Length: 340
Image (cartoon, rainbow, N blue to C red; front, side, top):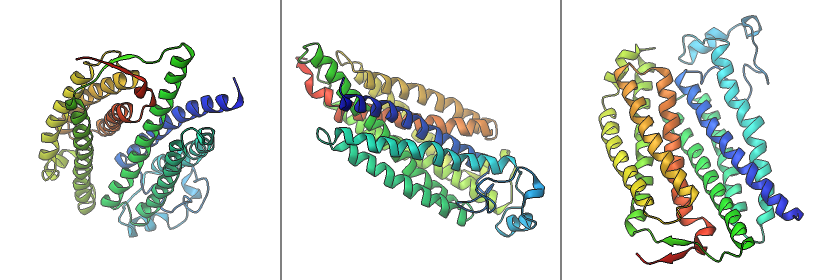
């Protein structure tokens, strides 16, 4: 195995780890929002003017309570909220940042064969910087709900790009195995045009559903801010504007995911990315229904909110995995179609 091949193998491993770190970053960010820890560090990029925030109240600035009140917050549960927000920032800088830089450098091992890896990595770096800048804006504007929602969008795009990179790299690994074993192609029944339609429609519908979910949360945040802190039992009443639409769309999402799952099973020698992508979508939708029911029936418990966001992200990853396997997997061009 030459140095170039070793570098490409390392790139695949680092890319998978990078995807996991990005997914966890969204979960950590969801924890920040759900626990109301966004102002746990009232300044940016430092926290209470320090690189490492204090752990005891006596080390806080003397006027920190007044500072919170002037920005619309009557209290902060120090040190819990401070360290939840700090963990969010720390994970971005210590874990995600170096992994993105490493994967970008390793993508150069493909520069002669497939420049798309470097282009996608550079796009991820740009979006990561943009997301960090948005994080600063969110803090400066005291967690304005609209800005918090906008902050989530590029994060989801970054995770989606990471899925595409991993799928494409896996496709090349499959090609290597096929070439090493003298296999020219694999019998593969061409899926119907309906499958492609389901994939594109599913991506649009799932994206809209996630945005609708953020609108539900934005509506709740608006009333929490106006009335200081509302009882969670009142949240369902305040979310009346977007919640019915969100519920209706959940039915549409369930139907389209079921259609994708059924259509994907009509392929001979079903590839692993599509197999696991369809399984991930089915599991995520099922979990979404359960957590969504818990949210509306039990006064929006915090744990259910976090799980709901997590499964929304995994649902998006599932559809992106199927799409990238269909359109961006280089191994697919080696498939030998058989008749219907």
